[in-house]
Image (tube, rainbow, N blue to C red; front, side, top):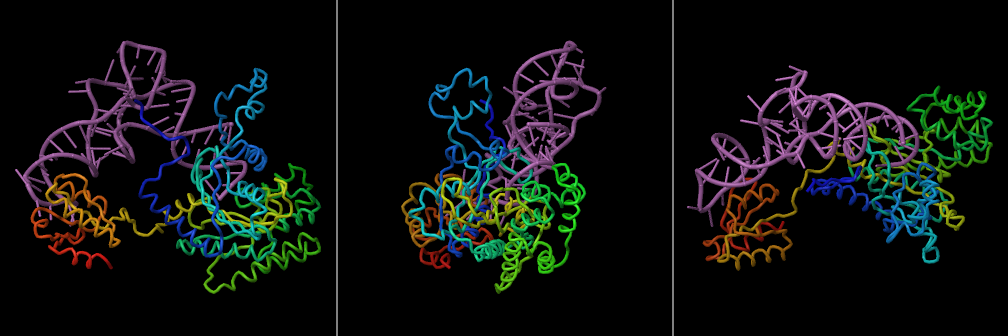
Amino acid sequence: MSKPGLPRGTRDFGPEQMFRRNYIIDNIRKVFERYGFQPLETPSMENLSVLTGKYGNEGDQLLFKVLNSGDYLSKTSGDDYAAGSKSLTPKISNKGLRYDLTVPFARYVVMHQNDITFPFKRYQIQPVWRADNPQKGRYREFYQCDADIIGTDSTLSDLEIVWLIHDVYKSLGLGDFELKMNNRRILTAISEYIGEPGKEGPLCVAIDKLDKIGLESVITELERSGFSSKSCELLSEVIQIKGSNEEKVDKLMGLIGDLPNGERGLQDVSFILGHASSKKDIQLKLDFDLTLARGLSYYTGTIFEVKPTSVKMGSITGGGRYDDLTGIFGLNGVSGTGISFGIDRIYDVMLELNLFPEEQSSNTKVLITNFGEKELDFSLKVLNDLRSAGISTEIYPSNAKMKKQFNYANKRGIPYVAVIGSEEASNQTITLKDMVSGSQDQLGLKEVLEKLVV
RNA sequence: GUGGUUGUAGUUCAGUUGGUUAGAACGCCUGAUUGUGGUUCAGGAGGUCGCCGGUUCAAGUCCGGUCUUCCACCCCA
């Protein structure tokens, strides 16, 4: 028999890792619920008609497709095979694994539009799959934690997202990050201002790389995609605007303030900037960054991204406002804003910064020894009494050597061992050993309960 | 999808110009200690050298392919 393995880009999570992952997820969930978000889960699989075409060409290639059940070749012919995988795939596969949580959410909203009370605030914590090439911080199966407010175009919701991000990272003790914010309308207005209206798509793609490849390479790339040298000159002036967040808003107002998109985008940004710090306990490095573009094409307003500052890692949280997410499924005029936390990356960052609470390798507080049948009745009574009192208790399942039973408690990090041998069983007492100090006392059941219930 | 990189015991890694029976540390098991773990000491088990093929008298070592790991690009969380 050959040794088993895992599919590329997937991982097992042992008890130790699950303890840490649950710590992250529990904290995020608590904050989500404190903000009034309601839980939602959707299936791992969606119909390919729901998924394809939503993430661009590249995204479609990254979808994991599920082969049809039964004789999946029955509806194909030799011609399909000859025409290549593009024409063959739809005939042998009509389902795929979800690529993110936003599109399934949009599908859900459209299907349940008559039952949902808007504005609808939902959160969703589930794995997603991408047939991508794995590397640092990139997996083929990973979790997203999404929170969206849908059915309102109020900028107040965007502000709530800022506070939500702040509170999530505060609860995790991760303060070492920067929240970047921009607005797609501003990028649109800039493309109009520099004389290349309608080209905000390529503009976003290029601008997004600014901190990676530098201004000159960005300009080169833009010229290659048809931007005139005059527009590029104007652009480099605009994106080199420096100063505080408020100063940047002011300067931009002078340039693109008369354009409808520019005015509205800057209003939103300044609303958020103005109110964000009104929260009492706020400690947030919020940066209005003109070069933040974000890839996903459905964003139309405010956009967010969180990056750790001292750990080399891509974005750990991203989101923004979209005006017409459900339009692709035939429901128009539903605006929303949302955020997605990448817990696998947050895990990596927190591990590197040593931010997890001390590991708790076991929930069990007491291990009851097993000496065999004579002591069993009393041992089981103690076991059940301790459990009834809310104390997490185990009994060693077989009459093994004491060395082995103590070793088990030690390895599992169980703090107390209750020794119940013939002597203890006959006078109904328990020898309770404290595994940390090494000391032990012979006690009655009541005394044990008093000692352990704190 | 493109380019580079990695693979030897449960884990982390050695392994000489190709040459006897592939090693270490940690971990694991047993005993010293028949009712007591963490320390110590003694002993033991554990390997299809990722897989398939090729070169050679001889391959862990060289060559080809393939899978995998990690990294970068693209894109993204």
